[in-house]
Image (cartoon, rainbow, N blue to C red; front, side, top):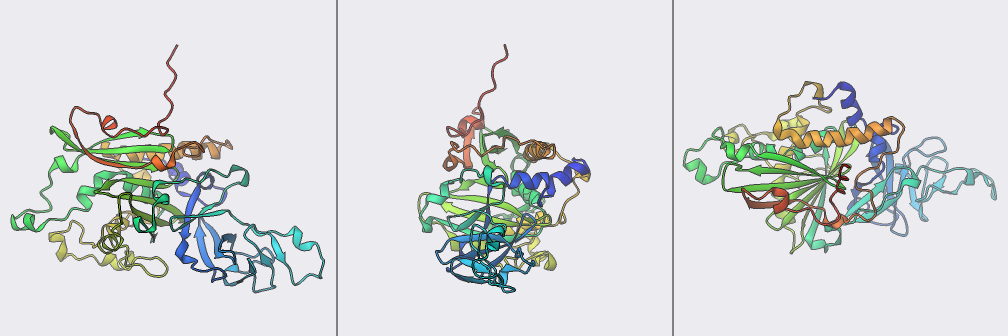
Length: 422
């Protein structure tokens, strides 16, 4: 349970907020490359961290990211002319390049130096693996770009989707660091189980009550759910929380999943979902069809959403625990049903919520330092960090083998050992 002040600290991410400062110290997924398909094409409005931004691809093919309001009179640049490597406001024709520099000011006399005094708020961008990443923090704090494993794969081995998630970003993160929900909320009876008269209420506690552990790392932490803890062989799923808002889940077969939940504003977030396979082609079409990520509109909102109760099928609840089609839609529903910003002063946590506690402790500690006017040493910003080695794990291990030994942390990702006491 959190205090009301702690809940506010964690969930408010707009300009000037401590949590907003923390998020702005990292490269964040901002939009899909396919949203800007061609140079000099239509700009795209982009709400991000409570800011109104506009993204565009200039004549050179590079992506610019500017504050949407023109510095002159505040007109929206989203309807501006994209030409000559810059974005031109429709109101008075002022033109700004990717750096925010004013390149033309038709309302001033030729040779006037006035335009040199005007700049639009601009943010750096990078493109990798179908995602446009943005850095919204102080220029002198620009971090290293995180070259994750999937970024170096051929196009046929990775696929990215983007969805509108209609709740605060923290609810999404908390849901997916708590693996205990998976074998309940996503439970579906097989044809064989149905024929044998099985019921969804008949839950095997060896399958639904995992032992849970958390391991701090240089990028955030790893979290493990150990199932069938009373048996000779344990089933283990390991995920990774990568500060400030990314998750890597243990693979299923050869396929891995990485996700990011980036605040759009305080009551919604952009869910970026990466499916990748280091060994061969990714099953993108099958995954999209069975997970519900293919059914989104041009605004990235799910067809099955909170306004239509996710098209829940009550009759299907004889076989499906929640009667909602698509695992990703199910996940969204779980967090969105808590409301836009859940009141954490009223919750009741248990032992399986340990990763949630670890997540909050990490974010509260660093956001609290920003609130106190300090510059914290944040995880995941060391240029020497081997970003490509970060990932989850799925395995079976003997009962006597610790999970950290069965799924060792790759070199360079462990926290330095604490000095021995004198």
